[in-house]
Amino acid sequence: MNGFSGRSKTWALALLLPVLSSCVEDGPGPGGYNPPPRPWPEPRPQMCTMEYRPVCGERGGRLETFGNACQARERGFRIVGTGECSRRPDRPDWDDRPGRPDWDRPSRPDWDRPERPDQGGACTREYRPVCGQLGPTRQTFPNACEASNAGFRSVTPGECRR
Image 1 (cartoon, rainbow, N blue to C red):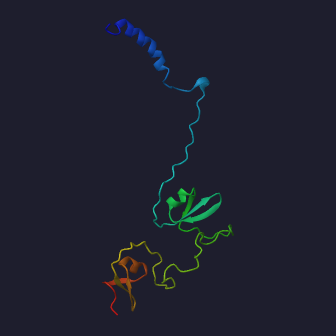
Image 2: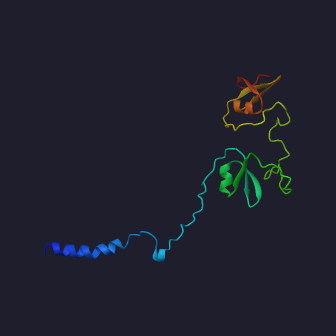
Image 3: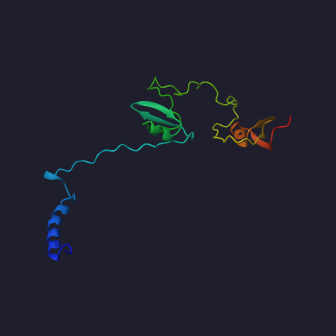
């Protein structure tokens, strides 16, 4: 035997063609019913950076300040503004700085100096000391970024001389 003859192949193809073509979905289902697409939740990020760009988020009528937009979205909050959430007279339960039990304490040693910059940037932890100057005051800082954040101008590399 040398397999199928030409006529057998034709019959096999004629029988298989309707079976194979019935596997293709085309158009609405029986009775014209087309089920709606399944709602998939919006994918949430797996990991957020620790970059500090505060945003105000809202969920269920509750406001909360987050370090950045990614962290707010990860917790299911909708971003309603940039910066920390401010106190709202229509929300007496909302504190000025939620999540910070130390909100009334200074975060920097120069907090009460009016000449210090309003916004400090994030600095690396590299140790490359500089001598910074602000008016007549000289102070040693671990790096130029820290000096700048404190409102000082870097004047010399290394520690300040006494």
